[in-house]
Figure 1 (spheres, one colour):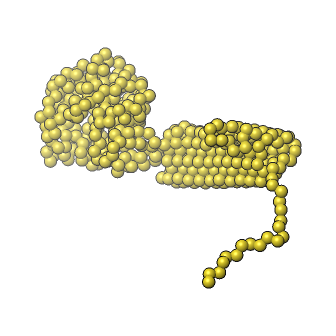
Figure 2 (cartoon, helix red, strand yellow; figure 1 turned 90 degrees about the horizontal axis):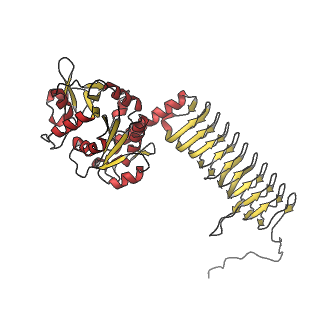
Amino acid sequence: MKLGVVILAAGLGKRMRSKRPKVLHPLAGRPLLGHVLEAAMAIKPTRIVVVHGHAGEQVRAALGDVPCTWVEQAEQRGTAHAVMQAMPELADLDRVLVLYGDVPLISPTTLERLIAAAETTPLALLTADLPDPTGYGRILRDPTGRIERIVEERDADAQQRRIRESNTGFLVADRACLADWLSRIDDDNAQGEYYLTDVTALAAADGISVASARPDSLTEVSGVNDRVQLAALERAWQRHQAEQLMRAGVTLQDPTRFDLRGRLSAASDCTIDVNVVIEGEVEIAEGVHIGPNCVLRDCAIGANTEILANCVIEGARVGADARIGPFARLRPGSELADATHVGNFVETKNTRLGAGSKANHLTYLGDASIGAGVNIGAGTITCNYDGVNKSRTEIGEGAFIGSNSALVAPVTIGAGATIGAGSVITRHAPAEQLTLSRARQHSISSWQRPQKQQKS
């Protein structure tokens, strides 16, 4: 069976009170619609069609690399009307699954369960018993339990509103049957819109048995209409991710103060302290300890390395048994070998630091290749940018760079060389030699400190 997925993402999202389209508001660092597209792709449909409307150009620009077909709903006339816009793109398919761009936590497992429920009938709905079904359409069943129709809350009477089994909006239908039902829907309701929920009554009237399935959790079918609901889903998603990590052998000092806004691959016996933010693709090996208030983005950390408090690591690779921070910043292109030390207020960018090398204090290392066993003194900087071009600094194994040195690139420091503290190095420093670049020190015995003039 060829399956098509339709994602309805044309809503205005007025209650978000934002210029940004609702489906582009981030949850765990990704747009709401991005989560839905990921779930859709996981079930491997033949085609995905996204129906956009408000600020559609922004939506397409943000998610244009996703393999899907984009269709515009220029006039907002309800959910059935939105699906109608997608149907021409699905003419060669067998079944249609309808998803929602503002219901981000639906899982592939639940979608597969819903699809399986529709294997022997032309229509299956995803329903849920909600503690508070306010705002949701209610599922009406006959005395035998057969689904008869869905009534929207605004059209429901008092008895119907007490029903807790609610329509989530997700459905799977035979494409040809769905096209027929859509053609028969009218807008005779309180809102004057074409409701997709009317499909259920039409199917029942045609004598079709409407199947149903349930989600694993209610968060899967929770939508986002305002920022309060978005924040609630953010916490639900983060708690789920935290539980998965802990079950995989990671210690989280406080699961409520952990934020995963990308993908984290973590080996066992890692420890993550409070207020750590993970973004992009991050990999941490066995025994890594990450201190509080750190941000890790698109990086890899080797086994038994310790990241102390308040570090920012982005686009970097750190070897095993290293010690980073506190207050260190590793920028893109930084590659730190095993047993390296990068201490407080040290910044690296596009720099390779050899095994056992150390830069423990107040240092900037940019566009540098540094051998093994090098000691970088406090206050050292590589002067890598002349305002137009960037140049590299090469430091050989075992070199010792004295404090407060400026290495003006392009420049090479030989293996085993020593640079005297306070030097400005502009030429090659030979291996195994002391190189200095200082003004001669003078003491003037007759000098007197200026005195403030007394006011008359």
